[in-house]
Amino acid sequence: MKAGLLVVLALVAWVLWRGSPIAEELPAQDHYFGSPAPILPMSFAHRDHTTVHCAECHHNFVDDTGHAPCMLCHVTDKELWPMLEEQFHDLCRGCHVKLAAHGEPGGPPRQCIGCHVQDFEP
Amino acid sequence: MVRLVSLFAAITAITFLSAPGLSSGWFWDAGNALGFCALAGLVYLSMPGAPRRDLRRHEAVGYAVLTVSVLHGLWFLLGDAAAVEWIKPGAPLSMWTGIGGLIALTALIFLAVMPTRMKVHRRYGVFVRWHRVIAWIAAAGVVHHIVATGFYVHTRLQALLLISLVALAALIRPWWVRNRTGPINLPAAGPFLVVVLTLVTTAVFTTLRLPAAP
Image (tube, rainbow over all chains, first blue to last red; front, side, top):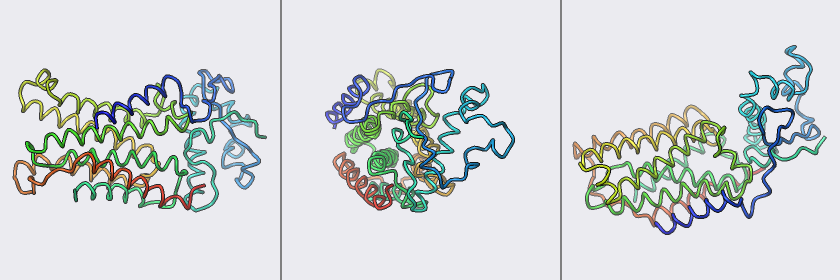
């Protein structure tokens, strides 16, 4: 059993050092949307979400908090920025999990690489 | 053996209490099943056995549980390039408590192995007390990791059942050993059984969720 543990630990060290030989390429972190620190890219295709009401995500359309794109506040606002990861994980994943729980096609509820890719979709 | 099988079954059952068909795809389900198996093994280690006769088995099962725990992390690092972000500074607290649980489990094992144990704790009583405290820290870290991520345990009932199961196993041991009311001479299950149960549970956990995979 100790030998098995050593093999697994050696594999962990290898993956951390050289990256996974089987996973897709790690998306490059950058100051996307003018973020104060490097963040992972996020993909969101509006055309895949046409059945979702706009205000489900764009709360500012109905609560009178401005008309700027999401990232302009959530990345650049000093109070909102620290909550970026939590808020967007809750929003995106929460909706996808709900759909999947109801047996509807809901996209990737958990896989990191399912959303954190360069956004080329309209 | 019955206790070990029951623990694996109970923890797996708790994950199915809400949204039993909810799947993240076989890859993520299998990786998370490994984590639940590691928790079942950790809880099993905290339950009473025959203290002296089973020390070697207790240690061997400890190595098996640690291997499964590390495998749980390795699985995601191997298959999802972005998962590495969850073991970096800035990762959510629930990931750090999981890592903390893993570190505590590692310390638990390696501080208990001779001759390290004698260097750190010369008195057996002090060793036992610290061993128990670190085990509680490991269990608390892992339970927080599971409940706070909310991937499979996301209702209050599930959280309550999981916390109760872990707490009961941890708190009952001193009472059980002191009062000798339980079957403390039952032979402990070995690491081979832990590995077999892990493989079976992971396969069952993944297969039962497979039809609903997106």
